[in-house]
Length: 568
Image (cartoon, rainbow, N blue to C red; front, side, top):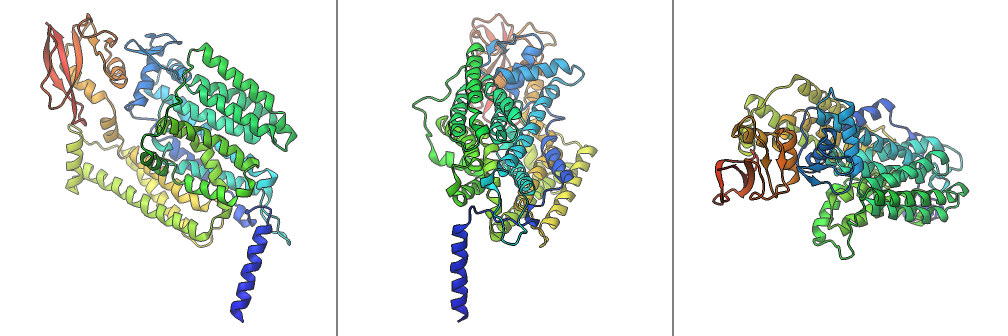
């Protein structure tokens, strides 16, 4: 008898779920918003570490800074920045931003001055993702189901909870961690993509701001080296808006058309038009691309797939179609560029927005699994960082220090009280967050993303405080430049470096302070000294008319060395 009653109840529940207008069943207490102070601390712990106390790192970060410094120091023109005479390819807007910051902040170290506006850009990305999710969650199709006797979440409260979840999902994305803290054109492209998604999301509610957003976003994409992405975004936006049920959104089509034409004209006028995606491009290694997607977009991609499944009858509605457009274009671009992680970076804002709409439909067991995975994974990584730090400072345990000395020869650990204090506070905050989240009385929608986002912020802060001197020693080219300087006279006319990588050329120009000639061959150059790359085990091949001064190796490089030559 009891079994029959339970069976009938299950049938009734299934029938009721089928008849619901959407899968979002959210109570009033589920729609609690994340305290603003906690949200600000999350963002600060994510954005600020890595801005201060380090050199530009190899490879793209140092290359981009080299182009910025060439403009700011007057070595190259604004329309053709160059490193050692080699011009830049696209992305002029990002180089202009860095160069303006260097010239506007002469009292700061140039690398720090160039990095500050990109920190502001990352902050703007976080803000735009929050507001994009907020406006999409306010649409009628995305609102939670109304209960017969009341008690459902209010529309604005529900939208704020969804937006908090989207912001946490973006912070938790592993792919944003390093690439989001560089001074590269891709970060400006990321800001432009976030601004475009915000423009489409806010069109029914903030018409003026939405028009301004798309009129800035698409030309910004074109000027930062992605004109094709800008045009595809414009065409997709026109298609979505023309089929919208909102009159205000349908009136948005001419503005998208104007933004697309402006981006096309700007790319053509600045000579940055570059068809980076070829018709015969494809993913050469599908398994490698799948692996990149799995870790780069974690944990947003499982939530995004769950959103597409649970909201499968609502794909034509704005809260699904808008982030789908923002996700599909960079995803296809990355695939056509043979699995480029920098193209995939542009999909993360839209992916986080799409993932946030899975939160009202998650089962408790799934949320608990995400929590415990985050607790164990990030706690172990934090312990790993602390063990290595203790070994570098106190010599115990001895094996981590031996590993460091083997991998980074010449590195000498140093103690920084401020870094130690910040790391200790962050670790205590992580323990408090774990204790708070594992309490049984938490009901907020965003609760399952607090620990993943907190763990990523913790790990980044620990590495940018406790490990920053070691990482800077390993990732910077300054140790190599110092070794080259020790073998050269104090004053030289110029240094020839033909066929060398752009990061090395940028380091020689900026950190070495030498005039570098990379356009002419070693036989054609008039420089008295030259740098030539050689394999570690190969016998040095000295060109005719030159003599070998020294063989110099980067402290962390076991495969290659640099031959320092002098003209006879």
